[in-house]
Length: 71
Image (tube, rainbow, N blue to C red; front, side):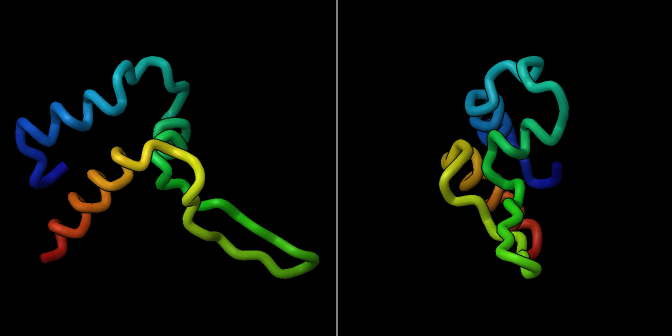
């Protein structure tokens, strides 16, 4: 991942802990809170950001890394 320095890498590792506990990448993204949630009513539906689940500190770190990538 670009722009990930030693301190940031250690922080990511400390939030994720043992990566082996997740069965696949989808479980990791869900844990981080970056997986969109699909809400629907009758025929209409939409994907929205999940604000109630996941590790918010890990989400914030990933968000900041992504924002800095495009500056």
